[in-house]
Image 1 (cartoon, rainbow, N blue to C red):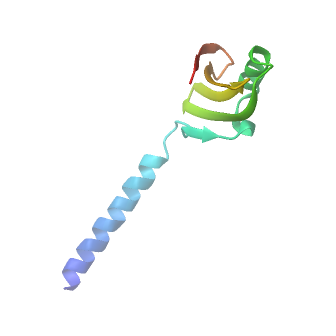
Image 2 (spheres, rainbow, N blue to C red):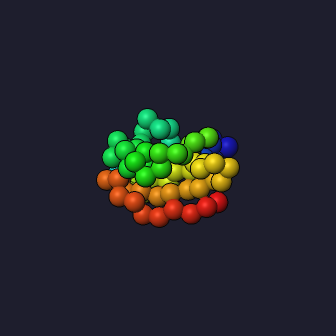
Length: 94
């Protein structure tokens, strides 16, 4: 009926507004990022600490202040974490 259709459309519209309001928060998106999105302080700290890093280097924003990078040293795969200001947090072989 027309009443059910209107109710359905109103519900759909409300859900769309709710979804948009949830995605417009102040936290930056987390997940994989390109090297160009990595703050220069983080990139400089990584390059200084791991001058022999090679292979596929992958960056990820873990939260608004933590950057994870995966890289190779020789044939070993490693990951390290840095703060947005370039502070070293930790490293581990993966």
